[in-house]
Image (tube, rainbow, N blue to C red):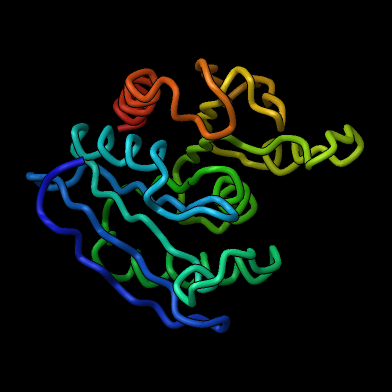
Length: 206
């Protein structure tokens, strides 16, 4: 992903400062894509970078969000309630500023996708992008499936999943498109396929 340096916005939350890195297209944005990182990774993950590039080429502004625990230098994720609260605080700040007046799609990879799904009913988002949604927890106990988090989203959803993802592959459903690519949970084996899937879906939403 090339282009000008992103604008970094620090947002104070109840659980410490978060950061949003804003990548702007060359023209007035058609919409805004706000993406969160995985539990142990950061915004440099290859699938996030590819999705960001696809959105920019489609004329969307992109915000890559770092949760407070990552800003503080920790790798162990915060509890779900803290993640969701910090995410809401960042969205509120962005929608009152650079994202004002444009359609907003939320999402992320793995844990970040779960956060976006859990908070998608706040009235801000018009769609949800899930990269490597972790359908089953480690151990793959079907009774602990995270499918209810996806099923609760009453918005257009795109799930992009590796065919060999150790956490499983969510099923398609009305309003939920699932694109399966070669690769694992890292979702870095077919970045051109990911780019195409994200770009086409955003174009349809716009």
